[in-house]
Length: 396
Ligand code: NAP
Ligand code: MG
Image 1 (cartoon, rainbow, N blue to C red):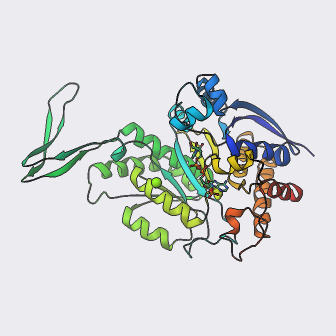
Image 2 (tube, rainbow, N blue to C red; image 1 turned 45 degrees about the vertical axis):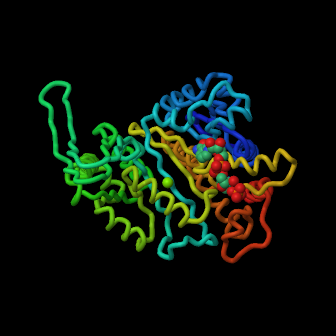
Image 3 (cartoon, helix red, strand yellow; image 1 turned 90 degrees about the horizontal axis):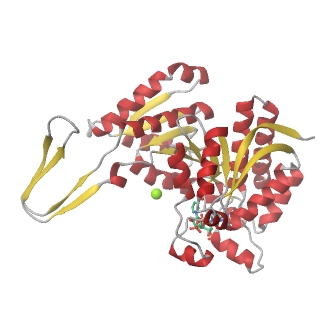
């Protein structure tokens, strides 16, 4: 029986090994069961080059229009890639372009499988991380102070009087840094986190250091508290809570918690903590990623790249064992979001069933090499890329 997915999904194809996996996922797992209205955009490096990267912008605008997208991993070209693929130029990161058009926040969430135990014993449910991706030290101005002198913080308003704050009276060499953020960016980050938590029906944690940084971190807290307060009724309806904690308390609580929350992080905290959480849960092949805009537009993808090394083996004709799980979950994320928007529970159910079949396949001992190495009990045999997908397809 074929299930009809009513609304459109914006499909963004990509590069290398993930492009190969992408095609297999569609052919083996999706198209035999679903009738989908796919708006296809080829973000493969060749087509981006041919269109002077306009296809990326068109795809992002299509997501704006239709609300749901699914994206395959893509090459962000550097000098080496420009030569390798004979490109006109080193085009910008597609993810960066899409993020700036949708003004979105990226959330990462691990997939939990019983026989891949997390490094932290108390973690039972996934911990999602929402990282603010603008400003702070990532857009700062730094200066190495050569010797004695006076450092000041100066603001010259478009109209009105100049403000100057004493920073430090240096008696010898040192360093200074000026950083900033904007209310608009912080507010849209808070809104995206709230939308994600409501969508996933998970608790929302936000941690900062407002006891020390009463103005800077205090402003983040103020904006978050205000935005969460404005959605109080929605939180109650979803049966979830918003918690503000000092960042050090949040870190301590995370290590003791069983998971299941969205942890909203300021830029630096998110950079550091997402790597800790990702490796704590096991493998890049089990990490999903979703871009959520303040207006509630979604782009789902795997957190990993195009798995270039495996692709080169594949081109040589050697068998590969590349994990397709995060790419499958990118599709199920988009399909179930579409089903929720269209109010078609059978579509949501299909996505959930595919997810549980994937998990059961791994739990029953069929997995790719990256997982076989960390599974408990260890498995001597691992499945090749296509074998794993065939196993999932036959169970589905
Ligand atoms: P990568 O594709 O994430 O792969 C790095 C390594 O991690 C692989 O060589 C492999 O290790 C392991 N790995 C990652 N995903 C795996 C999977 N699904 N199954 C099995 N192993 C997996 O990163 P990269 O090789 O540094 O980058 C390749 C290209 O991806 C670059 O051109 C980069 O621009 C792009 N990229 C795109 C995105 C995106 O579109 N969102 C994100 C990151 C990178 P072993 O080789 O040890 O098996
Ligand atoms: Mg990092």
